[in-house]
Amino acid sequence: MKKKKVFVTGITGQDGSYLTPILLDAGYEVHALVRLRGGDRPVIIDDLAREKKVIFHTGSLTDLSSLSTILEGVRPDEVYNLAAQSHVVSSFKSPVETWDVNYYGLGRLVNEALRVNPDVRIYQASTSEMFGNSPAPQSENTPFDPQSPYAMSKAMAHTDFIMHKRASMGAFAVSGILFNHESPRRGRDFVTRKITFSLAKIAFGLQECLELGNLNAVRDWGHAEDYVRAMFMMLQQDTPEDYVIASGESHSVRDFVEIAAQYFGINIAWEGEGKAEIGRNKMTGKIVVKVNPEFYRPREVNFIQGDATKAHTKLGWKPRYSFSDIVTEMVKSDQELVRREYKL
Image (cartoon, rainbow, N blue to C red; front, top):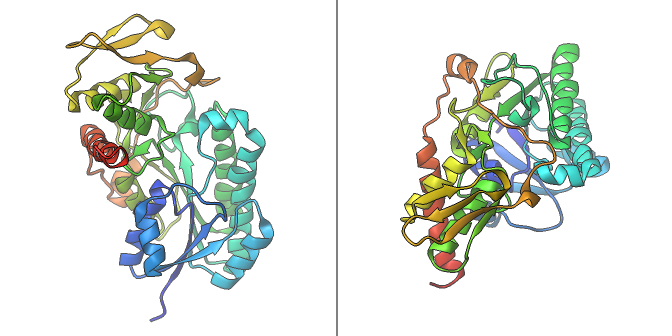
């Protein structure tokens, strides 16, 4: 039997690194879109490249010509769009780029994929940021209230290129509305990795203090490995539907800091409020955490908590990692990473 072909964008990111082994184990011929310019990427992707288990194609969601040529050659049975300009703060600084990748880029991908194979199955990585400050818990029926160019571009892409194509053309196009998901493979410019990597450096005496923005922001955090399982399950269903994927639990940035710090034997005592809040090491009295208003979002999303009941009942999906499991795995990994990078 001929292998099914799958086309993955954003394969060099956190989610792509966890999804790819699932696809390979399932017997797919995996094709991936990668940009010409380099950058940090998980070791597993470099290993797959060396072993030639994945076929890499150079191009971009912003370049219709290259995308069209690649898709005509591959003619995929399934597409996973994990590529995005995914930094919320950066989206305020670069809204044009954000829309070009997240909105128009998805449009190019969906239109070309359907052109070369009308029966293709398409997965879009949507985001809980689309809900903004809509009341929690947020489910598939919660109205969108995007608070950033990133969230706006994702919400419009979801509506115009997933929901509309499904309704008007009968396309098998689905969105996974994924809530925050983390792992040791998360980029260091995301707040969770910033916390775990910085605290590891502080524990080794390589950094004085961790500076963060809004400590009161509340998020529903899960593990990327759990969430990519749900992505795969969505494209194996008989009927295309959108699903919220979330842990159902919410924790503040402050909670994340406390659990991560405790791993290094640092118990934090909080003092002050708002911009003046600091966190001291209870044992030494040293300031470990400071609030820096430069890291505030122009428009904040205050409380996010997902309701993944539909995914539980229809997909049979359940998360395997707890919040504390996620934080502990990340701090252990960054402790070893700091040791290696600084030759300790």
